[in-house]
Length: 310
Image (tube, rainbow, N blue to C red; front, top):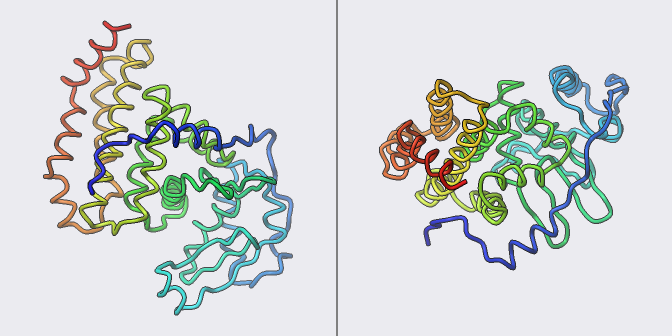
């Protein structure tokens, strides 16, 4: 059955909104003081860890980097297991162990390791979190982690649809704020931002529906349909966001066309590795409906409605 909107029932929304936790701000700069050369891991992985620390030092303030490094384990993932699980690497937070079949995947997994935190009731890893009753924002987290590994280490994008969708959220939030929310495990902060330009129920519906992407093959019609539903929601959020900034004088009329063009570009970036499928998607009615909303004429109509109804 095709998913047509982000509606979730009221009881599910209230349950999720109550269960999603915040760790609070990540105060102070957490400097890495451990000598990587003294880590008890295979020597071949140490240069990669050093590179990760060097590249992320200026932009990321991880919560407990020294504790993470002190017990970190890195081993090779067997070819048979990589084929069986369809994964070239993973991070096991139960024992703070990274396993990689393709060594460059270590950067993606190090982001997971450095953003993992747990309390007596919850685990947190970047934007995702869970407990015995909750498992949420895994797709959001994987998409953003892939964006970061591409940006900082020129790694390949594996979570194509997730990265595409998350890049639109980042365009609104800004890179610095998105990074800060990610490293401080602030899923609720992201939900509150989306809620400013939609509703809390839609914002949580967006997060939970995004997790459904994991159920489909990326090149299936179901995945493309769900991507369109998620993107359509973000278009509405983005137009509301632009309208508010325009009415407050934060952006000028001259900025609007540039902003809409940048946002539209996110619909094809990181989207598909199949050129034929990508071409079909760009001709699809869903894509054309979404991009027609991202026109100056539509923005002006939406702005008039919002200003007149204030």
